[in-house]
Length: 267
Image (tube, rainbow, N blue to C red):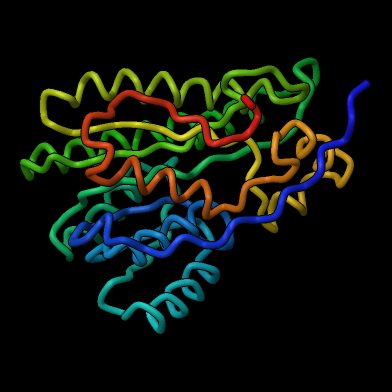
């Protein structure tokens, strides 16, 4: 008989320790209240020289920039609308980072999910998820890698994968395939870029709770997903962001081509 797990309390927020001091950080899909937005905040708290962040929602981006500028200073934040399916927009995002000295750390958070049975899934549904989640990540890895090599920077790239790239779940063939692809992309691009001193790693979160997820996921499924976690709760987005910041920092200097699970499912 399986007993319900007791939801453990959320830990205290961890203060910054200047892990990214002086670095120029670029983050995709960072408007709103999800993992990307938490990465932007964590990077600023960890002493980043500047953070350039993007999304496809202009209004939410502007609101986020205003709030962050008031808290951290307008000279440290810059937002730009960017659709990662458009190579020119990805280039423009990295051009914005050049204003601060060029990208040192690229955080690829953009992705698109959805639910569709494989028997009902259309080519359009499949292609859209793959283009944003996998090919979009590739475009950003390629563009950032080229900038880092040209500038002679020993930069860092961190991708956002998912535990669903390792395990099966109904209705998730497109998303799971895309995230498994992100893992393979991470390992192979790490091998390509190692000769330039550039590190490439990924995180693989299980369940990170934020308002958008609550809107698109039934309460029943969320309860089921939480019960898969040893702590009986979802991660806060900042808990995933912490690991991404660690991978981006010099504390992870010998790590490349790794996919780090950010979950409590293995306990």
